[in-house]
Image (cartoon, rainbow, N blue to C red; front, side, top):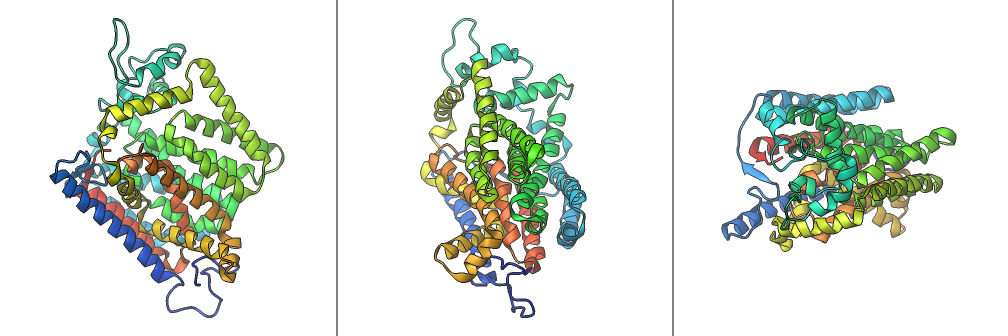
Length: 475
């Protein structure tokens, strides 16, 4: 098919009984993936030149943050074996397993993939990453009660002179996020799950559930067929490299399930629909106080509501979100004040000297690695299909009727990350910072013709394994 969208009533987007020599749009998909590969190469080359010229990009393996370190590890063979298993059986399992069993299987498989990649460098390093001096756990022992934490939180974000008895500024990651991020780890500590090891397990368990959340949302607004097609790609995501080693995996899980519940609310009537809308509002409101960047998740939520075509769930969820904001404000923390102080802190550190002219596009190269070549090809189909539909081309219009709700999820996400990189407040490290957006972009893989899925899954696996064994990431 010329414009790469799925025709209604067919599996591959072509008339049944007349299979083409290659899937429609196949060449354009390869061109898109290759172009993303060239963008990555350009980011590596330009980053190397800038470092040699002592330009402060502060990323030894730009566009990623880490160091070059080719190696194999204790679970390399396990990771390779899992990749081969998922490539060989993933599409068939996704097509045949009962839905609820499929979601549980996908969650378990994603967890196994995240764990196998993370343990390539051994358990001690995996557990150490979240217990470093600049991380949340460093502030947990001395954190005051919530009644004192919220009113004073914004005052401790930016660095500055402190008087007698005044607390110092928060460590980097606590300062870079609203207070719910620290509150989460305080709660975990109070439950007796202390230390970097437990933190890593929690990030892996919660983060790996996001593949199921995205699939639930896609099923609600675009149908089960597309949800099943996309699920193997969500499981075998290169983003798994950062899910097990970054607290952003928690932000991913909270926002993903919030959006999934919002999608369910657009389809359910009565009490289940109301309950889903209220729960969605609570999670999305909480997301605002986990990461300032998750304000952009509202753009994705708008896409969910457009795809779902119901106004009432948005009103209910919106009221609950406002309620969460009010509760924090009454408690002593005003979100906007925290954001203003964050900008001050950001420009006091590396953010103030990292060159915008490089990172504004190198961020997209890092994102391309995080989502993999299959997602890039899927995004091409989404953009091409929408463009063809706007131009009034018949087949593209028909295809958009079939896959349009999925496109309504994917393209707002692409708009959100574009806004993030243009803002200049996401210079580097987006491979973890943009995790809450990455899996929604990967949902576009469902638009790829099913007969090509194993090849694209293999490309995803090679990307993840290659990065893990060539780069010792900082996360």
